[in-house]
Length: 321
Image (cartoon, rainbow, N blue to C red; front, side, top):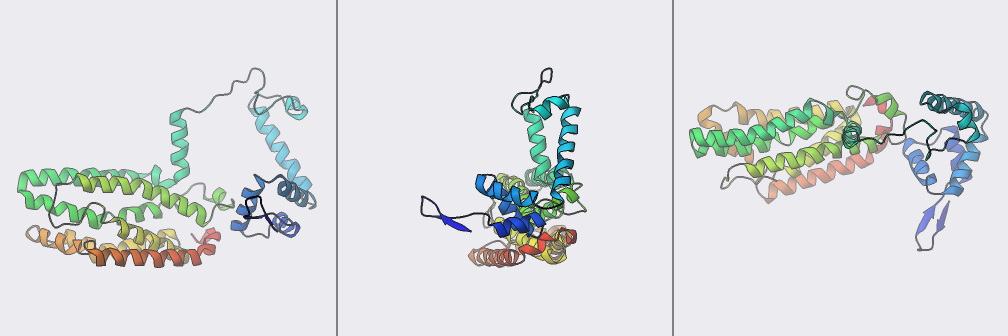
């Protein structure tokens, strides 16, 4: 049901019918996530939802099992069970003799990286750093040892590789093949497209600054695309991988887009013989240079984003990813 608040804006609340469907487990995961976020701040809806859950025959046994599990965990930490049952142990006041330790900065950072997704904890992150640092080193060493022309090749070559690196991160971030916590995340209301987009954003948040700064650090090259010219192509390809992943899975979708890009752009640029490498790099750069190319990538990104929005419910069936 919907009400109007003091600011004149409509605010929705959990109806009896919605509470009953939530208690029965028949609410879609995205709607269940909205209900759970709402009851965090609305006491009336929380009470209505709690009553609906308790009214179900199986709720009593489930609540008893949860209580037993909590008591067992607390006792294992050194808090006597009788204190917990009697309310003697407060979450804000640890039991006598039990010293609460706050996690340090390193621990919090580790937990953040762990939650951000497998891609930020594995070889993909190392490969990203090596590509960025290696491109800068190669450009300056080639420029010093073989003239300015050799150094100018590195910038377009970095541009054609940069859009593929986020795709590899997306492929390694989500799904049973990559995440040892997949079964747990699959059981949460936020485990569908919401978690996928969160981890994709984490991949982009790491790769975009690293690759853009590497491009900016390369020697100046007249007539070549700028350091940020790969951003729209990279975004469009990432969204294309996600949209395709709604049909065939994240790993297959990202791999398909990366293979298509490598076959048409990356391999021809790298496979050229040394005398023709400058021409191959210039040919690859046309995919980034100029307003027409950038507008085309922007249009492709919008189309893929629209398709992803239409297909968002397909990510609720996590076993296909």
